[in-house]
Length: 360
Ligand SMILES: [Zn+2]
Image (cartoon, rainbow, N blue to C red; front, side):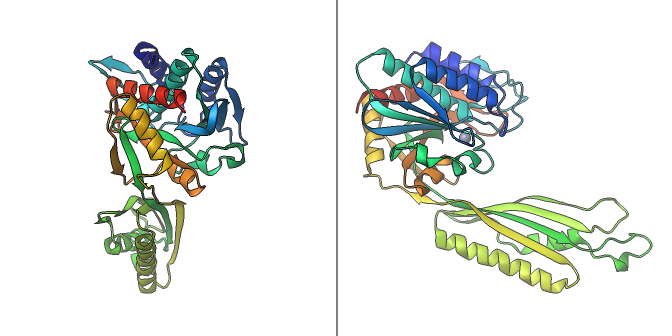
């Protein structure tokens, strides 16, 4: 049976290992050795994502989470306080996604301790999920046989199952005007910041509709108070669960940039829009959902089927034809210094995971 004390100890140990995106070697070593000591075959692909196999009955079921965390995420000091785990307030907690990793490790271990047979399992721990699903995009799918699974990376309790998620397009723009002395000859300058502001004022931003959002999250530019700013930079994104709305928004962005560019013929405006992941919409009657719902029922939970505005490794799995879908990991307020993990919910995740591993 899943052991809450061991689960929380694992969670705390994982949280204390620094693993900002791109620096996952230490956490990789820790989880790989834990998987090996449970008797799994642990391999890495060329990107150093962890792929481990547990032989068993039936087609493999994938249990996945990511190893990296966002910043500020170094020297995290987890505090256990009245049924929750939080940081000391100076960093994130890193419950995203360490709670997912801990759930998988405890689920596996408690299932194997029963020594009563198990489902075939594939563990996939990705690197660099935050800020672009980089590990998943580089995952060697030829090493993965499973067609169904779970990505332990959702908010809330483990019966919160995410069946729809949006596509995301990333927007970057560089605006080059002309520098000039602001006091002596400002008329010779072209302010890149003014052009950027003009663009910003015309773009469709914020909530566009119930399944579409748009944001410019960063605007930078200029050098000094007394120089007309020559360079400006915009960094943003837009998302929609509808690909036609995504395409509409992309056309609108191009339209605004063209319009503004035509007003400043001497400036140079470069716009780049790149898709970072694809939307998905999973049938609630599908095999994956059925398997998860059965494991939830075993521990007395009803599923809560949800859609989200966020992306996860699940978007990449599903794009590759693998129905691995996100469920909650008991964590709240991802990516904030007030992020918490609710111990009772993390425990429910481990119990559900244990049921999944045991019952084919
Ligand atoms: Zn995450």
